Image (cartoon, rainbow, N blue to C red):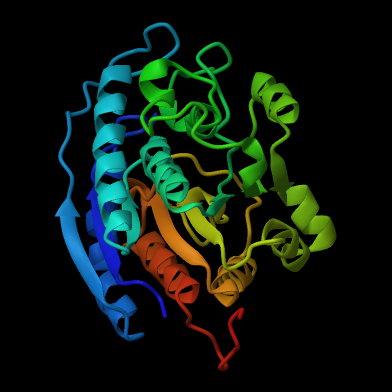
Length: 307
């Protein structure tokens, strides 16, 4: 049985290089995320939207854009996600830009420390998001959350979950990656991040990538999925601010989600970077909701979940 679900909106584009991701939570609601999940017999509560500082749209300072505002939003996200986990609910964070994965995953890591569970993070994204202020070409913090979670970043971000680093890079599996900055490549390599990039998927297939990404996930594993909508090929998901050609097809993405669902271990979810300003008639939000439905058990036939 899936835990009762709590939707948490985080309407901000504070860490992004384009405006518009702040409208993402409402676009997902318009695409019927609540009734779609309820149609599978799931108990769903919409907690509404978090509040935080507005986007000042300023240039970077010391390699970070909007650092104070990013800290405030991530602290709010951390507190909200952690509160739901304490109530044995499954939080779905509706973003918002992907810098918020820092607050969400730091809360999940804190919860796992509380209850003695292992953590596995699946980072579905076109980008590794492993930049630092010294490496970033833009200063946009949505390119830094995984690095901050692994301890590379300012104290105000790395300490949000109460422990530095919040996670071990060995707990992360990145899938669909196809855009990594030059300096970032070296740091990803040095940190030992497991990355199933599009070349791996092209050569070995999504099934092999997901089998490896989900290896050793068991009953004592909290499985967190951080789903950046730009993971998808822009032909099927144009509504993002940072499109990168050559992403997973619709069927590859469905297989990814269905194999996650088959584990029966999904315990928290981020849905990030949906930007209605770049979308066509809410097409991307509808595709995202369709894939989220597969994460929660939609399938052509009845299938057994992991014991």
